[in-house]
Image 1 (tube, rainbow, N blue to C red):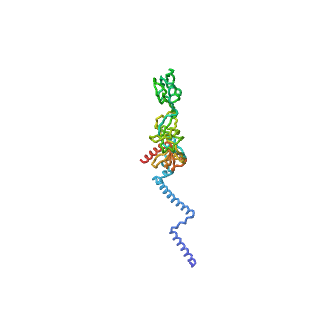
Image 2 (cartoon, one colour):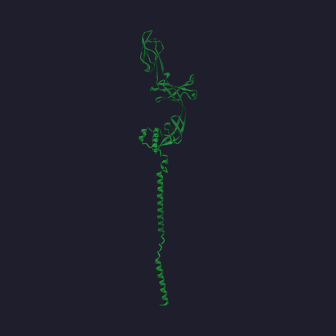
Length: 348
């Protein structure tokens, strides 16, 4: 073999030797392409995000179950709202009206008694002296104008004539009996009680605020309520009490105001306008303080309010309520009872 052939054989042997060494090592995989690598990273990211979302959801659920967020208790403050069906509202006697501006009336309380209207009373006497032959009425009888009250035999003519009633009304006094002499003295008193007077005692400190023409609400035991007008204020005081009299003319066509009845009169002495007020019956004392019940989409919600002036019928609202909100004016005590019942059950 020549030298050239020997060189070629040596080169071939070296190449085979290197190839054999390469077969014994595990080849490394080729680097992933950009598309494959990108897909791998997204998959890894989704796995991590899913684990993160599940962890957060579990944490939120735990907080919700434990009440840590108090979601409904603070959402608009409707946790204590009471829900009533329309039928239940009607049965409870709820009256709902919007809060808004109102006129408040300042009043002074006076006390007195009911008396007959002296301008509608008549004393009845015989026209001629004589002997009373008959008496046809008794105290308390109602008579028409011209009704025969008694008969009298004249001393001069010996004729019997009738004694008529000069007006329709009630016999309040009977001062004669058959066989007695009628000598010009009153035999009967008849009063028209379709109107009565209320005589109220007025103390000097209030005299400057009371005058004729003012409206008066008159109240008596048993729930009697009426309204009249002051027609007279006495310029003289009584020596015993140093009080004056304020006279109220009161309609009594239904006959409920009996003379002698003790009454209270609320005299309207001033009036003022306020931008926001509710009926006094709407206010209830709750644990949160003086409150009203406001109706909204969630039901009836108790709302603490700050009040101002009060005339006994309406109360000024300074804070806690807006004009136009629907407030329970009548029957709010029913909602207070229901609210208390719910709090008691919650406590157990």
